[in-house]
Image (cartoon, rainbow, N blue to C red; front, top):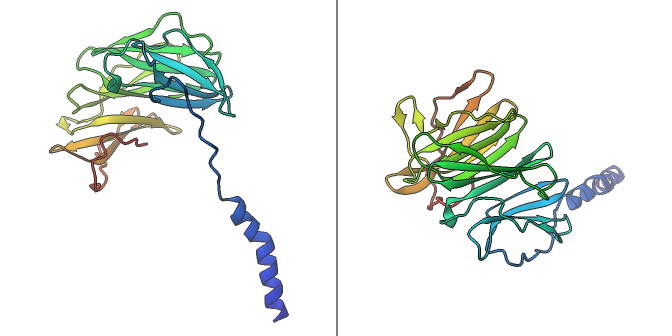
Length: 246
């Protein structure tokens, strides 16, 4: 009996504090003045970088918050092209001390801005990519050691494209992710992330007007090829067209 009691005491002393410490607490929300809504955000050693539409001017702005939630800086100059439709989107991402903002400038043109000092200064002019065919909506981006990986869908919301701005300053050709070797599938509002040797692109599928299935495709750098698999989820119980996926 004493042995059992001793075991229970040791269990409580060793494991119970671990369980209690593992419960996270959310910090108090910090109101952002003059911010209609947040388009995209990323974090680095400088703090929390927020990309948002200017409340009055037709442009995107960069806002830097400290880890304590206090505003450090707000870029008063345009850091992304004028927007005529807030839903078309822009994205901010970072890697290796370089912030990158990618945004739609027109139906066939992407603008890329970069900063190496936490957003205090940006490239004086945009790095431009002109799309040879198709159109651009709902931009998302993710940066890593290879460069800035970019995805978007077309204005009809049926095709998803991938492109990359390489670390050496060159652009890759746009690739249609929703074309499975000649067999088209639908795609809408894509997201992109990377792992050690792969790019992962996820998107919402439009199956007969029902936006309730997600799918994805992967690019493998070791084989320099895309997989030929459409990997859909099971049908969701609701429309997920405006949800975020990774």
